[in-house]
Image (cartoon, rainbow, N blue to C red; front, side):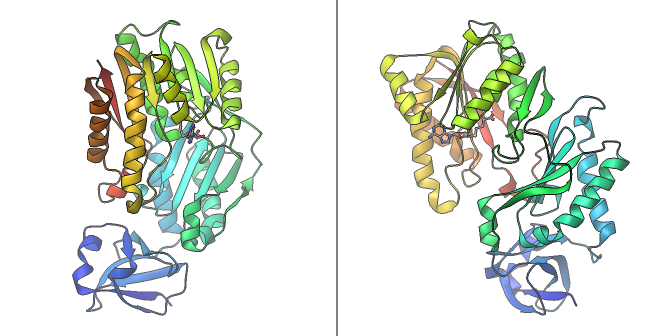
Length: 402
Ligand code: SAH
């Protein structure tokens, strides 16, 4: 029997507008529902609104899968998965291994499911109870679809070691879901470079794929300004495995707090035959590092500032804003006259508008001037559903600094 979730009369609007989340406060009544199963979402008069899955442990009690009165069966899954995967056809290369996101959860109308591809391997994240229960079935469907689309895969690895699962009453888990265990490092081609991905231990599913597009547009952009030789000084802050720097042709200083990230960065630069004298890997806390740079008056042609998420929810916005402002102030000071700053925030709770205001505040404090050259977005394989503004977590500014 399908459970029934009745919505309070004044709370129907977002659902009618196809927002996929139903919060506990919007629910009037729940009948015959079991955690992690499909429910019908209805008005107080009993009229059908949508169908989704229920978890009473989560603040987001229902995540909507469809607004049609249709069964959530194999046919539904096949259609949804295929639509998402086919829409990334441009990323597929018949012979070269590529890395990109195949399924971007709510933004691809499959709440709670993330699937990334690294060459012959898929990496799956199950973020909710229902998806967790369905994951074997989903893995099987994925193998069929990949076969049909002529992109056979060797294995599907699960990286459900993300804290948001705790909100669903789930623990953290990783391991092979289907097929072969991925090798220690998987190689993917991105732009004219090889990137090494550690599927099992790397951050997220192994790489910050959302930044791939921004990384790869950088060399062409910098070339326009003649910043495309070994004399161009690039400061890559929060470098992770060095992705932004690797895309340029400059002298790159990668800074990150994580030793394993920097080790993988070093291996990646070596794999690309990057001249040793044109790259540094510095393990440091960026706040300390930037204060030192400011004291020494060190400046760079290009600074990239891509910090981790500072605001995990709305209550943290003020503290996060102070952190971003501080960092941006120092980062602006580290840019030479007429140089560039790429500055990002991946906090969903910080809107693009607020982010721009924070950077403005930092600019005032830094006593510099800056122009917005571009607003930066996540890679196109990380689309944001127009009905789901929460999906727009990554925002950035490309600034010219004076
Ligand atoms: N720019 C990277 C992604 C950055 S993710 C890319 O394009 O791939 C954020 C990184 O910040 C992580 O690698 C994490 O190890 C690092 N980090 C987090 N806090 C830090 C701190 N206080 N100082 C230095 N690095 C930090």
